[in-house]
Image (cartoon, rainbow, N blue to C red; front, side, top):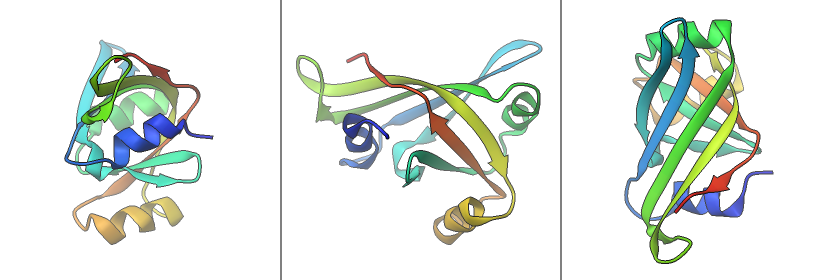
Length: 124
């Protein structure tokens, strides 16, 4: 089950930052998305894929991902502003229910990045 604080970060107020890290032959590769681009479906996060060419290539070799999310409008550990790190696994879907859900909201998406979060650690 997704952490309630993670849900709050992803669904509160204006846009926050979401960074996705994959591992490839040349080392870590990072891409960014806005929190408002994330759909929560059960225990998975669905993110629209426009480019993400290196991300897709890396996931074919190793499906492990790390995420960093933040939202300045959510109460953190000591003050307003909350962030979390999230290890998990991911796959890119170009058809099926996850892709249909993404395309419904983001007509420009060529695929859906589906992330299963394994744990969450609040850092701010």
